[in-house]
Length: 113
Length: 301
Image (cartoon, rainbow over all chains, first blue to last red):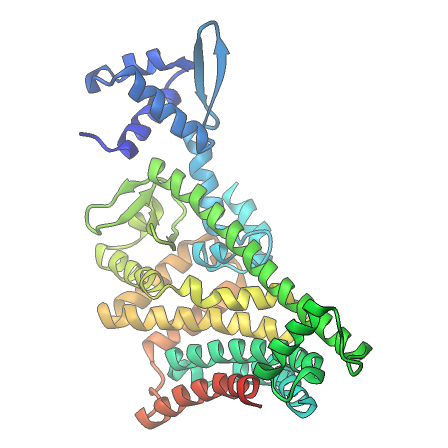
């Protein structure tokens, strides 16, 4: 029994590899070897939507889903979080995501591209 | 009670400024980071108690001879809407100032906490989607990016993260050394250790002592994590891993980063003599006493 996390990964991969927005049915077909129920796919898509990773638009009776950003964009976002001190010194997160002083943010951003 | 109020105010101001600056500039904390962190926590707690307490004690003085006696009387008076004649403008101002400081402190703390938790959740969601588990270290995830970076995401569902650049730059023992350092941060919840100082720093960024405190505490938790890591892996492995990471990271181009790294590496290579046991005990006692003084003043005097 795959965990929800694994399913989320698989569904995101299916959306990232698609050229156009996909319906839950499309995703289910792409992941046919996992033999997922449509409701399962919809549940996972709903979770991804709540996490802000997926958007959907209505088309006829179905919804079409697409990823908000590419895989590379998301990795870049994580790396920025990690190397970037947050906008203000107040974020503890920044302290633990990197060890780089806030005033060196801009230079890092340039280097990261 | 006026004397108590004035003493507390003096204590608070002393802790916020000269004491914080002196402690931040002292060299002994490098010889006992844990003791120094305890003293810093005590400075923060005692400073807050003293500053907030002084306003409260002064404002409530007309209601009783001590704070525990005055508080119920003040509440009764408030309920009956009958203020004793002795409550003048200075008392009301003191109470309002105390209330404003308390609200600001709590507000800043709440805002920082909410923002941090939200950012962490977002980061963790993405990480779980994009990271690949690294079999050699349970719980560590690898992010596919060439820039070497290793960090931890604290919280109840904490994460250890390595970029692919780290795995390219370091031998497996080096990776283990870096992970030992990050694990120490997670296990000892260093994110919570810095939190009060972040709140104080954001509440009164114009007080230099607060800024000094924040930087000093941040440096101390790194020392502490280095100590833990250097006990778990050969110190040489840790320094060479940190040096390689530092040299490969884009931050290496930035002088202050390398300067901070150099002093850290030097401390691991040539550890300063730990404080004698008796002095360490004394440091911890001093921390305890520091918190006890304003507490006793508030409850007894």
